[in-house]
Length: 446
Ligand SMILES: Cc1ncc(COP(=O)(O)O)c(C=O)c1O
Image (cartoon, rainbow, N blue to C red; front, top):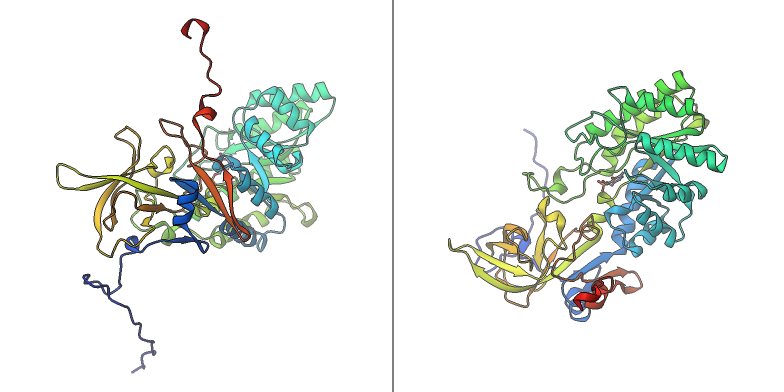
């Protein structure tokens, strides 16, 4: 009989009043600090609600992603998806790490330029690019991925106007999984992608240098990316053989999942979502089998947002009141709602008190400050009893919440960044004058 391995005993301190051998429920454990900085004084200084960004986490996520891919593919360039969160301090941090900017509108292009990012480090995607915006992007040598036939036409006009050939990429969409995002670019399976490649080559004004596909978001299976990589290789082979195209880059878009948990998920996201290594292991070996000689290896662009920035930002919010439903259930109103947490429609956010409210937990629903029934941050979550003035932290809210936030009956709050050298206010809270400054009252209504 085999002897069992020795295992060191674990001593867990029981919490009085709870028959729970693991101690407190995680949602009752006070979360008092971010990166060693106490949250309460931050709230007192900058007001509630308050977004808190961790510079260290941001850099860490970027480095982890880069490492996983550059271990397996020799020419990797991450570009950060600005739409996910275009706070200047966040974009600047990632730029310092080496990220390009991936923008999907003229407005986002301007944000990148305002951070002194040169055109050749900006990837310009998106379904709506005006001729003026394209002219600037072309003159600054931005990497432009074409979304439609109309864009081909516009770019050919610009090429004639400037009397130069313009390098471009094309956006493609593939049938590769549950999310088939077919509104962007040209479809592969129907043959449209090939027709477009041929149209560009025959048009003789544009140089086809890249292919791009952003397949969806929160794609929590590596199988989708395997298929995408296979179809990239296949498509490259076709356009190489038929049109003599030599690609300088292929861009697999964004879409990796973050550790947040979807409402539809049974297990927590941090247990089910692939790691960067797993994504890289699925994608890179397939791309490395592409039809290119070693010295012609295309750059592998990626445009992640969610997977880099979600974990780097939290939102702290204060309880303003509590209520009982008619059925006896309990709810809290806090001062941040779906105006600042749009993604609470998809995610079961992790919420913890920032002060010690004891170990007993109860099921509650958390509503925001908006005068709308749908302003629900989380239904049936477990929390210890809270009082008016207590605060909670809603964790990992970095992706999409700020860029999709709305100024609906409430103003947007301050945002601080915790860096190695201290706490920085990276965005002032909005005020009445700021919001109203663009309004004009016609003379007859004054
Ligand atoms: C073209 C493009 N690239 C990248 C992204 C970033 O996606 P994610 O945040 O899922 O990584 C998006 C977001 O939808 C996008 O539209």
